[in-house]
Length: 369
Ligand code: ACO
Image (cartoon, rainbow, N blue to C red):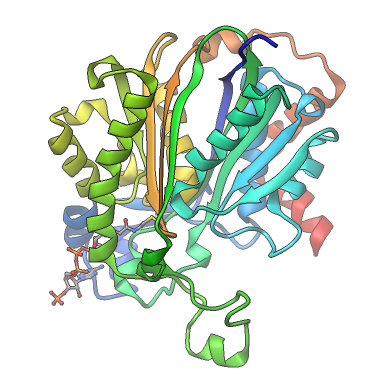
């Protein structure tokens, strides 16, 4: 079998309409716009409404990615949803997406690597494509972090936001796509960032709710120290694996957890900040969705062109960290939109995207209520 590469040929994102600003937060807890902006770089974040969820955002982002790719849903072999808060403990969010978009031939599963989930999932899907097992995969990062937050805890509630991003990967014999990856974990640091209750150790009970054990608990300083170390190590590792130097990289798309973490990486790597995609000011930390959302925005701003090498890098609870080098091969979005879209199931997917957000919510919630 000839060598196969996993090219990214489609991308999409979805964020809730509702925006929560730092000013809004300063009326909820003892904080200020000045503290949040200077300590994190965040100005505002998008927050789901009552009829939105991890699955509704995932479907929207996934459908947009299919449209950009010009790939009908029935041609998908695999759907991976990376998420920190799935729709249900079971079934997986990926199965809900598979059903909603009509991807009747796709295997589907969720992947939990917290904020490192997107590059983790991308690597898994790429390897399945490179091995010859699959040809078309949809990888989604989708989060409703606002539902994991203790809204009275000022040390965490100012940091997170909701959203989803997705890419379509396709097998191709032309060199490109995912050139290298690094996946890492250090479970000894698991207590730095966790949600204590709701799992097997501490199932939901009246007591866990009264004790507020279902929200994120974080040692911010510990995570900060870990993040600034692994983000640089991860970038260096994947560059070495790909046989590339920093100068060969057009853009770095880092997980958006704190602007200061990205600035620290830029300083250590002696790179100007314009070599990094930074949009944390408008979205906060959207966990697994932050990298694909940043990727979509960089593409729409023309910051990534065919032939460019880019690096994705993330860190998160687990502890986990992950990075990958991607050689961009897809033409600019405008050219892609000219592809004739005739397939029946693809038309169904396109009609999902045309419908209002409310209808998409209706599709998901209506089935599961
Ligand atoms: N508003 C005002 N003051 C605040 C706030 C707030 N929202 N939050 C904390 N403070 C106060 C603290 O009470 C403390 O006050 P004190 O000095 O009187 O005790 C002071 O600010 C400093 O607090 P620290 O927590 O020590 O501040 P730090 O410099 O560590 O910055 C921050 C906090 C921004 C959270 C930082 O630690 C950080 O970004 N860490 C990384 C977090 C992260 O990336 N998490 C996501 C990982 S990805 C995932 O898997 C989800």
